Image 1: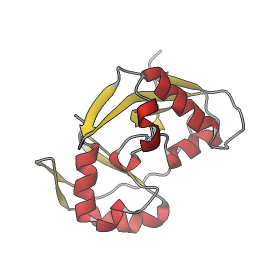
Image 2: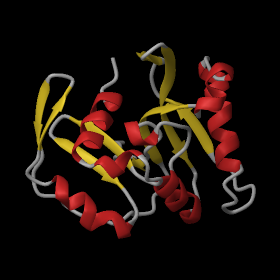
Image 3: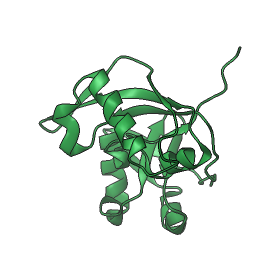
Length: 176
């Protein structure tokens, strides 16, 4: 069960314009709501501070926002990446979805043809939204250029970013 759809529904109820604006993504993890948006929407997003949202019957009270700029990293991770709506039926397997993500990164126009690695981190995640099956993977990207890193963080990969899918963050440092 994936909470991104329910979270996006609750936010769209609080901010009716959120449903129709591009370039915005929401990710709810225990203890934190991350909003990825262009800088010109920051003031509008601050209106969520102090709001109580009902997310699938669970209360979520939002605190004061902390604004953080994007930071380049050669490795990025996303807890859930899914294909775009038009590609969903073609990307129902881990290898198909990983290939789709790799193609999207190649087509981004950043640093033409730089080598990078797409790594699937866990078993496939599947959930239902209305009558549609949605399939996704936790993914890490490695060996990115600075340009690719910022592009992926700004634009994400795959589909359903408003629901938290395809949002990438710098990978935590791993102990040696």
